[in-house]
Image: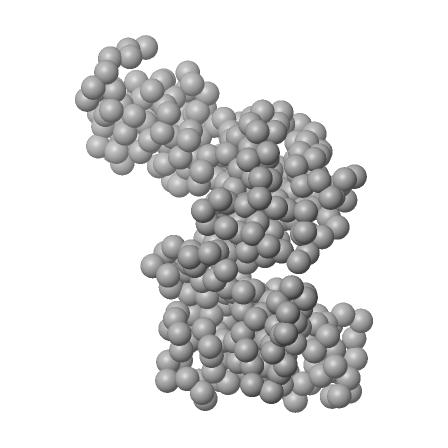
Amino acid sequence: MSRSPGVPRLLRRLNDRAALELLLTDGPLTRAELGERTGLSKVTAGQLLARLEERGLVEVAGERAGGRGPHAALYAVAPSSAYVAGLEVLPDSMRVAVADITGRVVVEITLNPSDSRDPVKAVHEAVRRACDAADVNLSRLRAFVIGTRGVVDPVTGDVRWSYDLPDWHVGVLASLRQTLGASVTIENDVNLVALAEHTYGAAVGHDDFAVIWAGVGQGLGVMLGGRLHRGISGGAGEIGWLPVPGEPLPSDVSEPQSGSFQRLVGHDALRGLAERHGVTGHTVSDLVRGGDEAYLDQVAARLAVGAAAVTVVLDPGLIVLSGDVGRAGGERLAAKVQEAVARVCPSRPTVVTTGVAGNPVLRGALVAALEQAREQVFSDTV
């Protein structure tokens, strides 16, 4: 294969990348169809496909019958050309998903690492076990994205602080990259939820929106102009600390679950509210799902405090309710939050429930990992 420098090589690389992206989004395609969509001649398209097939990046995925002549081969991105992993780190467990370069999830597992106090060993064990289950060699993984609670420093990429993950500290990211031998990124879990909503869920087609995560903890993911907003220190979105009139202010931020908004809408608060309304259920999700109108009105009024603060500061236009409370409340709760926000804000955002199926943190982690892996694979084709 020619390795001539300069413009011809650059053009081949650009054409290869354009073809791979087309095959990902619109494939499988015949040689003629690929030529038509890229503007390449049939001969050039054929040479391109042969080159990519030789590198293991595309494969014949079938045939298309046409007229009286021979059937035309259909080409697609080879799923096994690269893999990625997404992880969600919880205090006592990890969830791992492995996907091929096309985005197809090949395995998803939840496990309790044998040494959860050593983040590097725990992640390596989790990924190895997921790869074993998927029958994929760990060395085939090109990118790992790990979702954690807490604040991720945008400069170092390490977890700056997290009450739930005290052993995740400065230096963990570098050790993970050395151990796994690939691109590794640590990201705030609710930011990953926002990526998932933007790609698959309620925020598809919206470049300005916010996700309010309501569950055991509270979080906020914000996308402005199609980009995640993390803040100068990575702390944007820690909405649990939002001061709320009538709720105690924390005297020591090192104490978990002491923020005013957390006290207002956390699980303990919603259980207490349910008890006062005579609503019963085994879990907070049960309470919200089965609560009467009076109870749900109060839950919505509390969530609207956070939604209103986001609205008057950022005016995102769309607010997505996620987490176990947002999911359990569904559109019924979302409509009540929208009405409550409209009563107190000059801007009136649309409030909807999550549109992401499955684990939104894992799905967002895979979105980010696939973007990185495709950039690596598609940029190095010649």
